[in-house]
Image 1 (cartoon, rainbow, N blue to C red):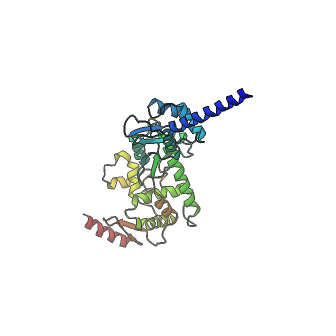
Image 2 (cartoon, rainbow, N blue to C red; image 1 turned 120 degrees about the horizontal axis):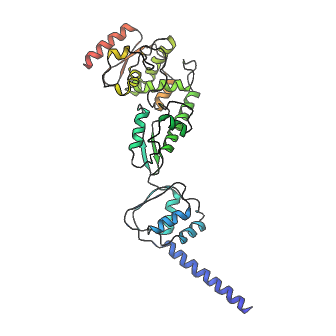
Image 3 (cartoon, one colour; image 1 turned 180 degrees about the horizontal axis):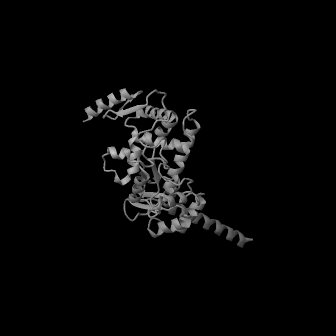
Length: 331
């Protein structure tokens, strides 16, 4: 009986001593290798690999105590992938809080409204913080990889700023941009003006991409949309230069000539009625909403004033006078 009490007492003393030492250990700052010290936790990393990574770098005194601390605190599965920066010496306890609260340094990439998918891919391929898994793939291969139903990539990705952890795959960024576009397009289609001459949301996306390229000033966007809707309703040719420029591709030298307007191809809206077969750019949300909720106008024509604004006309003689006026002023 005496021996049992002695063993219990020794055990309790050992637990108290270990607890005291452990609390001191996890609250004592460790000297970081350099200041500031930057490190990354990759997506899918488990507690043991992260603890070993930080211990090997000298950020932690050892791996096992950090693993124990994480489990005691209930954070064994709460580590957040990301890029981190330590500006000063820190304790294991503070470090655990830091990498479970998600206070991370994220990289970002921005896709601009009106840019093409080719330009978007160039932006992706040139970003130093991205893992370039799609660099050698065709556009069609990329669409299959991200699970897209469409066969042409143009216009399917939403222009926005996307945040990601350093070393993330460009595939994940493309998937996210595709999902955002699908969601925005579906929401806009659900609230569209009735009786539009558009058969489906993809045609709305095509029209939005043209509106994006034609709009110089935001205030004109819905009226430009109204002009194109009026033309589609009446069977008029859209006669929009950006579609021809898109069809020319790398052949376009910055100067659109009369022969370019007369040479027939699937993107020439001067020779072919209706919409072109695909979008010609990445439209932003404002252009998507304008395509599906255009201004009620009798305008059938517009011409750029040279200051970003457009002049609208409801008949050809007025339009011709506006063209002569603004082209002369522009020259």
